[in-house]
Length: 499
Ligand code: TXE
Image (cartoon, rainbow, N blue to C red; front, side, top):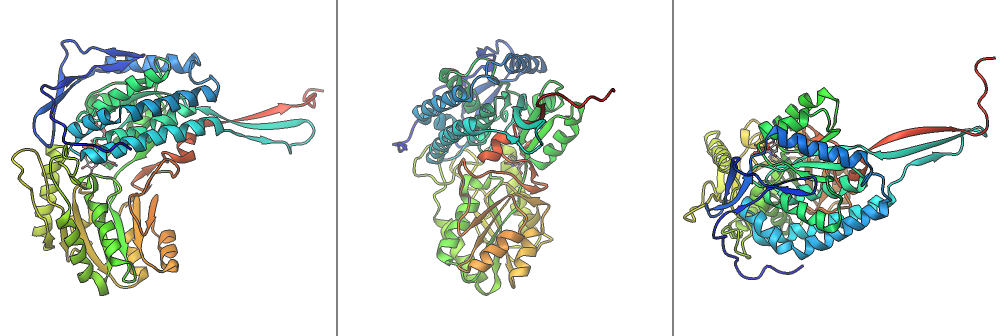
């Protein structure tokens, strides 16, 4: 990966984007735009079209046409794979530009954004392989007169609704797999972070993706997102966002019983046993809550630590958090950038205030950091947290860690499972039996042992309980976007029914 060298400057004026339908950039004309201000600098950086339901209909029609005429869904998988591989190459060659716009809109550190783009290219490469290995099954055991086949077919037109915390990474954990399966896409990014989703349209066209296979309609969730989940000509929606909007998607999808993939919230435990390498675990726990300013569905926001080391471990984590470099997202040495939206900033500060009111002990952080402009919050650690407190139950989506001590393995597991969510969990121990036992008994879709937030294209993502339905990435990721057909083939002549 090329390193980000030096600090890039802010754009002189906001860049105006069009939306993208049927292989063409659509000019928004006189219609209204969302103006996005950089959360780290509070200057306007992008202008994004406010699309209408009519724009969405155009995009769905284009995606439907492209799907039905077979220009993508019925070509040999090797040709699909080649487009995905070319896209990966272009993506790498434009990584600096993608990272720049991602950072400007989202507020994440530029070095992190750059690494994420690299990871996205890997997703395309892996999905290219899956396109070629996707297969069904054959039954050669049905007797002389019958042969059975099970085939996988692309599910059709997929609506893709993505959030603002990892606009490009979450997009690329889905798009290559959906395309590898042979489906076509209408994407709707979050209204505050649409730029890189639109840039991907250019990249895919240049890579040779036929027109109509990847369309982007920008706009608000309540208008475009809601219309997508209700749309009768969309076959499946993959939604990543809050659990409350996920529930609305379930209600709206009933119109045509479209399939849903849902990746929702989390309140993820970090379980630390006394026998862990505490120095390493403290670094991991600090990373787990600080990464992406804690605006991460899989961030480890509950620290469940064995009582005998709780006080020592709390100090270790606080010392790590105090050293993390918070600051200008465009500075290549920054580790924690800005809070992405004003609303999210308020939510996090409200939770910090609530933690104090409810009697939790503030160990470090505890409020906003003033850099003259933008929204920044100091990584915050609360001790003496009880399971009744809001900071231990709700997904805060910010750099706020709640510490709760446990006695014994069973209590640790019970505390870890005491949540409506089941997205991710980590365990830190040198004892293999404890590690395996906890891994098996904690109900979460992603699990880390002596590490956290590790990822990649091979292992699937998704949640248990109210954290969602279905899986993205890995071989499961492509299968989600297919449906199964069973075929019975008569060999010779049927036994007549009418005699
Ligand atoms: O999410 P929304 P918000 C959580 C996190 C955060 C909270 C609120 O706790 O504090 O959600 O964030 C689109 N029909 N997560 O309000 O509203 C919206 O335009 C269809 C966790 O930003 O769920 C955006 O594209 N779509 C999460 C996407 O849904 C709708 C990531 C997510 O926005 C819609 C983000 C509707 N009625 C927030 N309303 C994660 N799991 O990673 C909005 N949208």
